[in-house]
Image: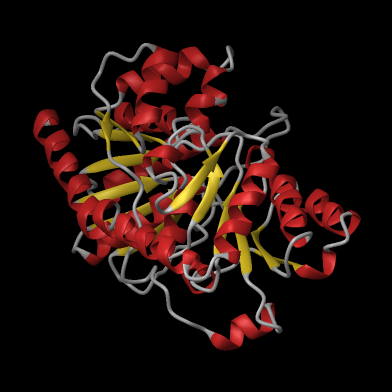
Length: 375
């Protein structure tokens, strides 16, 4: 198949999943055309079936804000015609599904079906904004196929928008061959020179991720034991987290690494992964950690309970319950063999339910069904 994929290219779950999906599909022989304003952050061009088409947005004195939605729609239609795309797959409803709808209308006489994958804040936050709700609902309903990354998000979409069309739950996934526990003594020695246990957090450091809670939890752990905290990612709340680490007196034990490639190599060195988010529609970072045999301490919100099994491969706590999260972290790190036992169970769970080898064929089957219905 020839598939156009549009996503946000930034450091966030929806873009990461879309990028990984495209690369996995290309590896399986499909021609993949990414259409966005910048190359997705994890995109690897090593496969010649992967193509990138940049959406250029002109500058017009009339506009305070440039019309990206329209420029994207035009580029989608152009690529669809030139590459003879079979379908478009857009990730994140706003504004991508609107652009895809316009592209489909411009693509006459050949029908260009499009699929919308819902990832989270396009429904739970942006979609509930009254000014966006009608157009978001309309674009979703006009999609030739709709998928969500968790059962929680499917329910939230139906409740928020009253969508009558079936929504297929196709979960996020991880490449289980890449994401696995491989020891890197040199890296561990760099981060924890005295053999301290390593806690880790990975996100885009937006307010919903509550990265200052990560630092608060770590400070409570440090009151009881030696440890290091590795913070991977970049975003608006990094400054607040750095300031808090200094204020709490743990600044020398916290490493802020910014955006990184080959995330699996870093996760594989962690002993505990912290994800104290306000909301997660799935919890991709938690899954990536689990695949690397890292037990997860996360908030009991959204789709996270579908990924993390409390007391088995991690622990779930209420949002803002920092003391409980710290208590679980200390328990894992101070009990001999506990981290490895839970980590192995986490890996087994990831392999059983979320490996790309099992999830990608579900997308392929879904594409074929949409094409059959649209022909």
